[in-house]
Amino acid sequence: MQISDVFHAAAGVVNRGATALITSPRWGRIVGRGLTEIRYTGRRSGRTVALPVGYRRRGSDILIGVAMPDGKTWWRNFTGAGAPLTILLGGTERPGHAVATRDERGRVTVTVRLDT
Image (cartoon, rainbow, N blue to C red; front, side, top):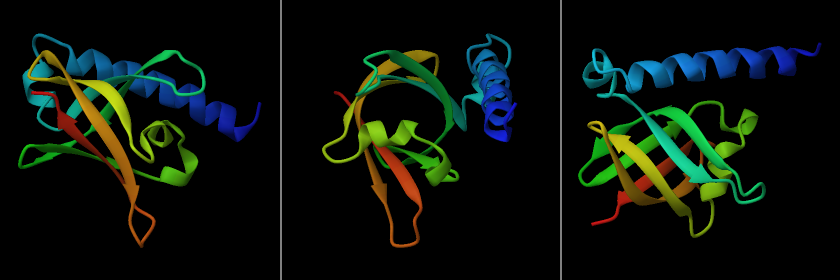
């Protein structure tokens, strides 16, 4: 088994645990202040993907920072003109449009604008 296989298996376990906390009636309000779940359709696979992510708000925008972006691929679904997604906020799924940008330091941020 390769290290990348171990990493992906561990990430799956962590993601399932984070999603359980986010959607928990008991812990969701607390955890949901900085973690949420996004759902989107993969541009190549066409499959629906659910992923827990950290976020923060800036005005009406929701910013999702991508840690170690070169080792991840999910954010690439939102490059260029971006793509639609659904984000769980306050226990409610909200549709929006996300665009990924990379700054001069290589940091990636996915900016979500909620549909009105």
